[in-house]
Image (spheres, rainbow, N blue to C red):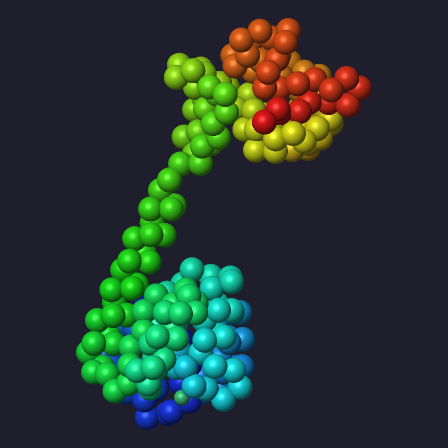
Length: 229
Ligand code: CA
């Protein structure tokens, strides 16, 4: 169930909004003070915010700005004056929509539903996207755990993939063999840091054009390895 926070100091309006939204199956919380409302908006998880503009404490403009600094959650501004609409546009606050008073509750509900649906779609698409690292012909699909060199797939063992993905995710950072062993193998696993050397060698054979002159995983003598970005 989607949870909505209404920040509105006119109780009759807040109650009206809540009643209609609850009838549509939403869970609704109300705050009447700007400062308290902002604190809740930032510290708790809501799926959508409905902000009145003129509030005691701090106004809806400021709350909207503060929410945007931390979250992509949809924000709907409610204003009593038509003039405010220009201000909303002018400020570029990142509000998703605005509605002017007086409004019909069913219009409010329709807009809330539309924004929630759009936001869910966006979130879903972001989650579905594979995390991919691509550099100079080497493509590491961290989600699918597949590696391609110039379009040709190379078969990696689990640990070989883990070592490569870890190094490539931390480019230009030198890791000692001990550090790599600790990060990729769990502490209680059998084997020792010599395993790291063996794995680096195998990875190079698969991804490097010339293992003697590696262009991806460099050896930093006396220190460890570095993925060159
Ligand atoms: Ca107000």
